[in-house]
Image (cartoon, rainbow, N blue to C red):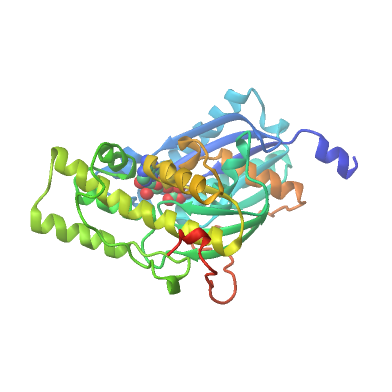
Length: 361
Ligand code: KG4
Ligand code: ZN
């Protein structure tokens, strides 16, 4: 088979994701058609602790992984032997959690003789958008906002990612979850806070926006905002009803405003007019609206996956894996699980050029 034939023929890839608290398996054809997309959430396991308990996550992955893979195969009507490859998240994440998906993927690759390929979780998030009918061209910028990461990156091709800025402390999703926990909204609280904020007044409570000065470039900081909320609740007491809704709206607005402001700054700096948002916080309704509005105002195109493909899933891992396999990448059975794996950062500072049309401070 020639390279052209290989490219033209269909490629069926099974993706596996177990880096945090979702056990997921999906089958994607040619990196664009989802034949199965199964996600087993562990929210109930961790809710009573107000956060992910790593050992419990590993154990729940062990219980869920085979049923999830079986469900993906049954939904697609395929057998393991009809697959062309197995893609699995191997970094970054909770090592015990990653290992469950990784060992399962290795076993499937070994018994079928099919290629195995490891996928960086954030490369997975960046790939969810290629399942949409009108994905962004290269180069584009991406705001990756999840429970563990907040980064602005430049994407020059599949797997060609350069980090331009990142959070210096909490991730945006962490800020949502910690804020929600403080306000008694349960765990994980981002989506609930989003709902409670609906109809609230974003100007009701003054909260800080950290690291917005030009010299802070494209980096973020959210830990001060969480502390400000803590002080507000300590001084004024736990709100309910309309006051709770106003506080949620103000808190959410403080996060969203900084994310959008830095994205606009990145657009001006890189002179790239296509921006995608991905990761769990990209499901946030206020962020989606604000980014679309900023794009319309500044003249850049905004691409956002549907909410269920923003949060952790395995279809995005299968897509990233498909592109890796097409580039000829293969991993051996020694592929390790890696807890921390920063994206390659652009060397030197992140200089800010003149703001676009006066929109970027
Ligand atoms: O990408 P993801 O599923 O897992 C990680 O890779 O971390 O992101 C999970 C994060 C959690 O912090 C969750 O609260 C947040 O995404 N999230 C939201 C919303 N839906 C999920 N945050 C704000 N608004 C939402 N609608
Ligand atoms: Zn994620």
